Image 1: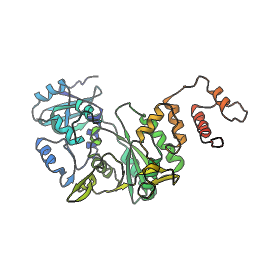
Image 2: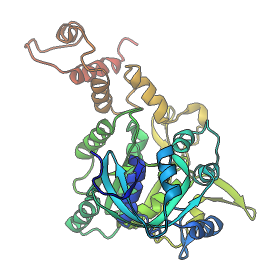
Image 3: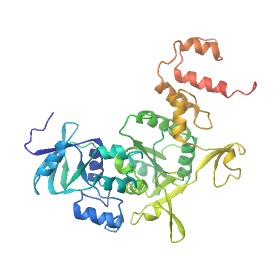
Length: 396
């Protein structure tokens, strides 16, 4: 459906729509508007808005020849329509149209413009060389109920401290579980912002969410954990990711943020003969940021331990790399239970490989112990019972 209005039209994608919604919902404060050229230059110089951290200019610069021609033709004060998914998404009163260097923009977000860097090429393709500033009004934006969900959870338990944890859980493994428990030990309410990607790669958001909810509902105290969706747009992707995470978490009502020691955006650097991280660059955002320990499985300690406290060294430690665990699952292999909980592995495999067995019931009764009763079994049941056989050690 095309717009019936006579205004000129810009076309945007889902990432731009998500970012505009975050801004309009007040979740990116101190950023409150699309920035003009003067504001962009100022923030590139200071990384501050009104004395508070914001890592890069917030702009709208959609790619494509049609958008470029429209942007070149705009005058200050003109009203334009913004379309997303062939529907009227917002209207905007033009303040200024100005040129930008897409390569410089990419560097400010990712710290590099190397196309081999994850995300750089995708962002480059959707970024134009003309940006538009001005006040906009959402017409058909989605309704963000996350604030209400979090506030309701806080009131329910009279939470004094609310901690945020941003994660992909792709997949949810044992170190994730320990990180969640550690954060929960030091707070009243834990808000897990589960990243929802814009690509179909890796595990779907629905599989990751159901896995996380299974763990929460079966292995954690009730009413102390809330899971909310966080659209994983490009603004959360760069080396300033932790700053944006802190800003969004604060605006959602959290007063603490926990990040993992091996967080890609943590980045250590030397300043005046002392080691610092990106966290030291957070100014004016009233949220406490804690860096959690890195957890490993130690074959000497025979349990999950912090690298800070385990004395046995790397040759006895198994690290938790989500991409490698995911590779096992994508090959149809059950990962060891020291890496990922068997119930979650079974669930994920049953979703990734539906109906993979020609005769599941025959396989089930041929190689697994049964009570003798004819019962229906799911592929998830089969994986769980198979894992029990893997854990049998009497003949090894």
